[in-house]
Image (tube, rainbow, N blue to C red; front, side, top):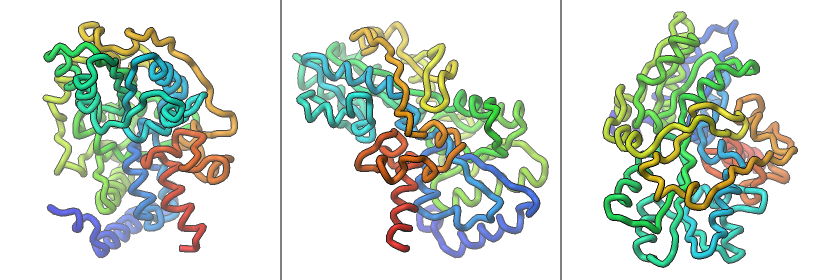
Length: 370
């Protein structure tokens, strides 16, 4: 298949859904976790859960980088933005993430120079245009976005730009999956592997899930047919008693990953001993910080970031949703105090957040009777 339309063909989608219905064991309940927030968005957008048998349950994992960012890290970033002569830059979905004293957008309304950028290179360009100001890029994302940050830092070093720095919040997907598997209150039968992250790291790194935990993994694309095919592949593995890593998204994901991207990351970053995740707590070896060679461009060192720890609002149940213990609509604040317009928790901010995706593509449709 070559074109998007083919992956949205109604007949192929219905045929694949029927294959899933024939493949499932009617006496078994299947719990499959889609790790990637992009998959969660597609599942809700296209109503894929409605095509599945009742005994196939999709669990929404911690694959939205904005969602897993703890409130304390947001507060640390805002404290940098409040420094004199600082231009604070971030991706669009970060701009509305709430900290204790508001979001970056709210801080901008109070007079701080906070700007949205589409890439870290945009932030570096601002630094070149404003040599009398310090430009800080709030870096966030899994391995998907880390290479662009790494390449930008390599460019900054090459060109000698010194009024540019990065506040790194890049996290790693594999330690998060291991933390989920080690959690005593989680029961997952298989994983729909993240497509975007896997374009960088490849499919091979997931083999420990099958080897050590006996759980199948299928790397999936993002179109309806991609996801249904991946679910079918997982069901077949489970019916046959297999635990393997399969690559449904082979048209995009190389088995060994993107070597150039991995090399750039390795040159710029090193793994943090510990990093806090919203809902999952501290996970060892799960995030990236700048190597000592890039200390001159490290905002955490330049501004002596304290590492504030902040608990989420008690009523918000983001952690339970992130771990798959609750569905978005089961949170006490969902659709009431917490909406995309006025988010209390980070899961209601990004389009890839489980709560925001459910709100837009299920909750609102049900409200108008669609």
